[in-house]
Length: 268
Length: 280
Figure 1 (cartoon, rainbow over the protein chains, first blue to last red):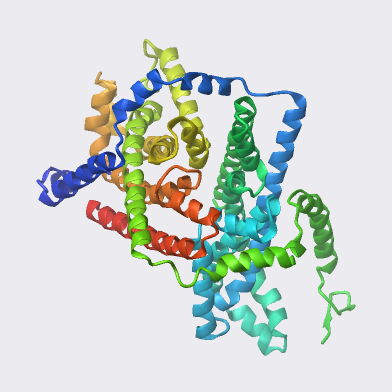
Figure 2 (cartoon, chains in turn yellow, red):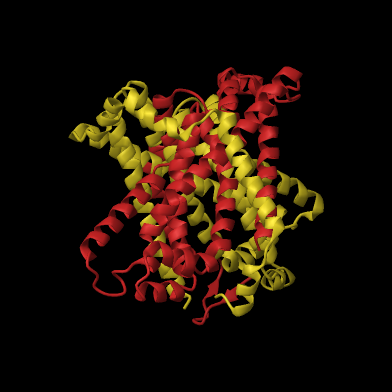
């Protein structure tokens, strides 16, 4: 909402804003020249070259039943990779969360914090390339790559959740003679469980998206199919894979929007 | 240690054990085919051949390659990545502004009342929405892979891939920002007979400019990361360099590039934060 005072501020002459504005414009123009890009040239490029037939071939996707069955298999593979990776990462992250939240002293805390930051800073594609070396081509490499990256992300989020959760229940159980593991399982976990689940589901959504493209480095799923078909110059089949990717992402988007709306609704 | 239930029977174990075990069993039944599909074979990790290949690769990570010649190549690739992100976002804005303005309901004349071209504008809005969905629904690396086939290896494909995906993404967010703010001034202008563009410029832009700019800068930060990823399929910059070093199993080079990548992401985060603070 803009009030009267806002409008007054907006009318003031701001030399700093102008400097920033022109610096950004200048750097943007410099970027184009550095890369040797001329946006106007793109259009003449499209007119001159023979890429029109290349693009045209994408408009006749291969919709034969056997190929659609393979696509279905690819979708299931992509979903499996993401689901198993998210599940494994959540289990690992519960283990990482305890030291990350400082339950085992400050040294363990800084070590696991560093580990989590490292795991999530390395992009999924880099992990995938390394995992392809470790276990060979195929969906298992993709699963491991997503597990490692997601464990870093969730380890940090779970740790923060644990840190912010009151310890009264846990302490009560320990004081009345329960073991530390049982105290965690019955005193702490039920309280933080919904939050952990919601973080995991959110990461699963992102992992489905990621699992579709990890195949470009040979880590299975729809991505590997697309890479393969494009390498063999089979554009109609590649087009079918792209449509499947688009549909998968749209369906996941729609479901997660519905769930989020339902959750907001139930919270009042 | 024994607890007593209301019936006096002692609980010797978890009272919810049976339901929990059922849940576990059902999950395992669902999980089994998934493990099959993902070819989940952890013993592959213990395969001596694989361990040797990976070990030889990872051992080279320390020390990172710091030869002057290589560092110069990395520096150029880093600048190229930043330039790709910047040029990509600039083109994305060119796509997103018209698309966002078309989609946004706050500038819809047909929402106010029955206009002359009611069906036509509805149709155009549907087309624009579909275009937006199409542009951002396909991941940038897929666009990059396709565009590399058209424009050849190098940053052109990367820039266009970012322009396309982020164009779709920005147009969605632009239209949402325009709808979430105070839309009354624009509505008043439209009701009084102003054109769509004028209603945007005088009725919506003054109150939303800061948020629009701030979000665009934030997206630039994401584009830096995305341009590295797009590089993996040959679309230029740091990603392409990393892909080459990976394929040659040159661990020293890969670790240098990874370190530079971390620094670059940190730098981009801070630049973006700095600009967004200035905007407030």
